[in-house]
Image (cartoon, rainbow, N blue to C red; front, side, top):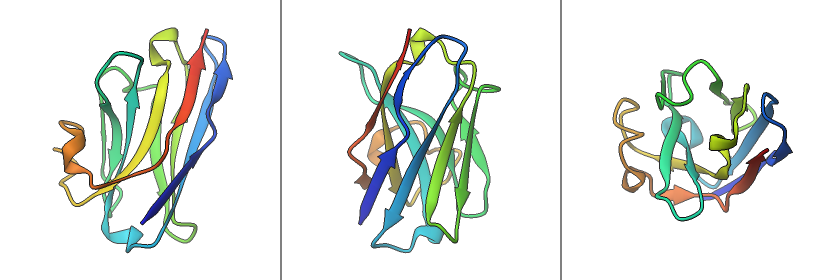
Amino acid sequence: VQLVESGGGSVQAGGSLRLSCAASGFSYSRYCMGWFGQAPGKEREGVAAIDRVGTTNYADSVKGRFTISRDYAKKTVYLQMDSLNPEDTAMYYCAAGEVPVRQALRSRHYFASWGQGTQVTVS
């Protein structure tokens, strides 16, 4: 299993970024995919998740600002991040797991496979 994130960077408050996560080495279409954020000194927290049929789940803090999507042909999951604010600053990780999407954001332990992370900094 390999998950490779990209798209992080530094942006001013109010700006946008799109994160990508390229998946390989497993049956991508069968898994729930999630994005988690970890700020310095804090726990890794669920941000958004999408199941194999496209049902989504978002943390309250990002609803209406972030959009998760997945491309089955490209085996890639995306996180469109709009109206960013400094509280969104974190390392963002892509994850794959066999978990119902409605539970997916409750704990990182539902996800068995992780990428290396991509840093998002909002000033």
